[in-house]
Length: 105
Length: 162
Image (cartoon, rainbow over all chains, first blue to last red; front, side):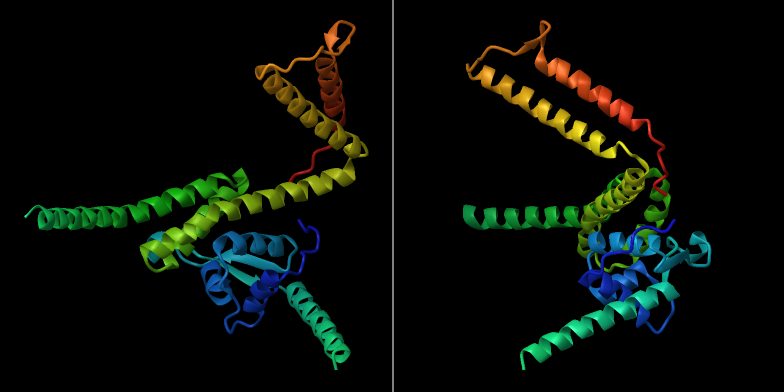
């Protein structure tokens, strides 16, 4: 079910940015944590918020854990809605930064 | 003679303790991970147990693994709070008596704190006459009224947090 629009914080932007800017479409939690240098206690609550808002979607990786020899990874992928939200947030930040830069000239 | 022997024994004991601690780290990481999963709502436990176990497998080194798992309980509590708050937001919009419900709940908590404080004061020897309503302590009457209000307000449609 879709919930409230997530707050765009620095950590949220980092997590979204890692997924938007990744060469492979899907990333596991461990890969996102590595890219964003976020602790597990911060990252997973962000991922669930983004997933509930339908900015991200996730699925289990293919394969049987017994064949893989380890637990299956959960793979996250940014949705079109998430990409748009990320671009909008970046545009807003750029606008604010531009205004601040002009004001300080 | 005694000092070198003590040094050797201390070094040996420290070595044994370090080895023991190293051997315990994976077990400890696993225990912490499972404790964190237990903090999650029931419908999320299975998913996060596997997801966090796979993440743990990708973290190199036993100390880093433990550091990773030590952050998980906080994450689990945040997830739980987020899901709970989400459901409460829906409930709040659905319930016309939600404001009254929350007010009664806060008053009940305040009353409990006041009763507790009075007991502590009495324990230290400070006593004052109790206010009574129809021969019953006013706290008992107030608590009864507040619980009744809470029960009445709670009979609202509960929406799933999922």
